[in-house]
Length: 115
Length: 109
Image (cartoon, rainbow over all chains, first blue to last red; front, side):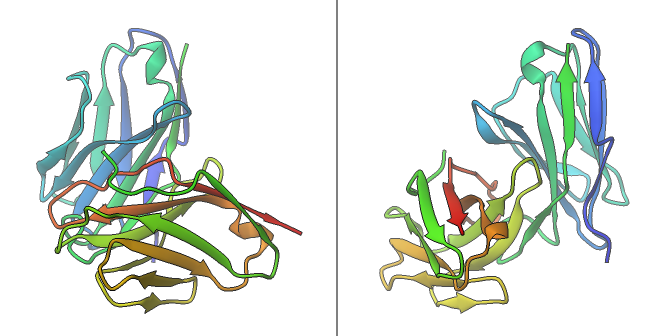
């Protein structure tokens, strides 16, 4: 079956702009999590959605937001982009809420560069 | 914050077993031990997980000590393609998946 699909794969934006990234989970998976990966900070958790509700949130400013649709697809939005937002943004999907003896599968990520 | 401790890096000869240790002395009873790996610039790949029994799948084996305070991931016959960062993570239902710094495994020919 198809894996986790993230679009776009690469993106270049200017400081101050906003960006929306998309994640399509594996069919049947209801949980979607987002992560930011930078060389300095490693993989950091942004938020998790399950059944269209945000269930967990990481320590990121309010400029980072997300949502999940009824078909489990998820989007994350970053407003007022800063140079430090340049990163690989990863999405993971799982059948249930994390950790319940379930596996999370990651997409290939969206590489965002802010100039 | 990550609740596991892993060596920063390890080397392994191609064709030999790679044994990656992980300490998790404050593990709770309902926390599973998960292993993921990440090959450069790709999304992390699920390897294996377990609660208290040893587990084996087509990729690896997971050995968890009886007191559950440490575990070892075993790649039985390492290949060059196994060179990656390996993450040992504790995960419980309803909580977020938190990645630490991981172990850089270098498989050498």
